[in-house]
Image 1: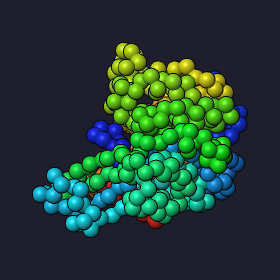
Image 2 (image 1 turned 90 degrees about the horizontal axis):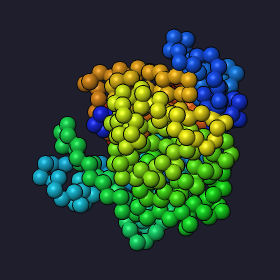
Image 3 (image 1 turned 180 degrees about the vertical axis):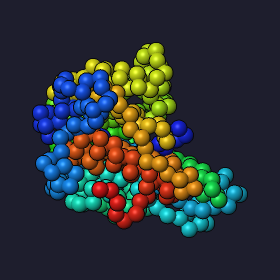
Image 4 (image 1 turned 180 degrees about the horizontal axis):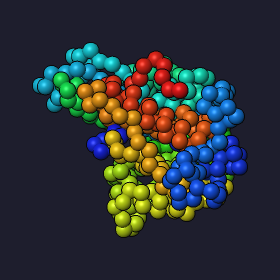
Length: 381
C-alpha cells in the first residue's frame, strides 16, 4: 500500500571481479538460454562458498533506501464513508504501517534478512506531528534504521486505505514527503556517513519528483566506489514528465526495476521503436553507463507472467510463484515486495537467480495479505 502493484494494475556489492553479472563478463553463455540462463545463473554477485546454505554475516546499514515515507492508515469502512476519509482515524478502528514505495521495499528486505536488525537504512521527510511519531515507531518495529528529515511546514504524508468488502480505495497525500531537502539532511556529516557505509542502494523513481539532486548524489557516490545502485521506473508518468532527471541518473544505475507498463512507456519516451518487453529490456540494459566495471542488469516484472532479466549477454525469463486466485487479497504492494526480496539476497552477494527467486517469494507472501505486510518470519530457503 502506498506502494506499487506488481505488473498490470498495479536490487553487499563486493569487488567487481566477484560479481560477474555486474562486471564486464563476456564469457560463456552470451545469447544462450539453455545452460542455466548463462551469466544470469552465475550471478549478479557470486555467493560465498557453500552457496545458498552458507551462513554469512551482514553489517548494519548495508542497504540504503531513500524515498517518500507515508504512514499507511488502514480501516474497514462503510460505503458512505469513502467521500470523507479525513474522519478515518476518529470513526473507525485503524491499523498503521510504515509505507511509501521505497520504504515498503526496504522494510520487506529487512524482514527477509531478519538479522542483524537495522541492516536497512531509510531516509525521507516527515512532519513534526502525531503521525510522524507513529511512523517512526512503525519503522522501528520493522527494524529499519529510519533517519527522517523532520520539518514543520507540512504534515506527515499518509495513505488512507479504506476497505469495503473485497474493494479497497487508496487516498494518498504526500505532504511532507515532498519537502525533503538534500542540504538539510543528506549533506549532514552524520547522515552521509550512513550513505557511505552502505553497499547496496535503492531509490524508487518517485523520489525524482522530490529531490533529483539527492538521488544523483547517492548514485554518483555508489558508482565512484564501485557499489551497487538500483532504481525503479516506478510509474509511467516518471518516464514521461521527469525524463530529464531520470536520464541524468540512468548512467549510474546498476540494477533497474520496473513492470511491463512502465517499461512500455519508458521505451516510447526513449524512441526504442519496439513493444517487445525482452527487446525493451535489452535496449535499456545497453544505455550508457558510467561505472564500466559493472554491467547493468534490467529486471521487468509482469504480474502473473514471467519476470524478464536482461544482462549484457542475454535476456532470460523466470516464472513467478503461482498463487491460487482465491488466496490473493491485495496485489498493490507486490512490486515493492519483489524489489525487497531481490535486495535481501543482493546484499549477500548471491546470484541474480536467487535474487529473483527471493523477489517472487516476497511478492507471493504480500499479495495474500492486506497492504504491504508480512508474517513474523519468512519461510524462504
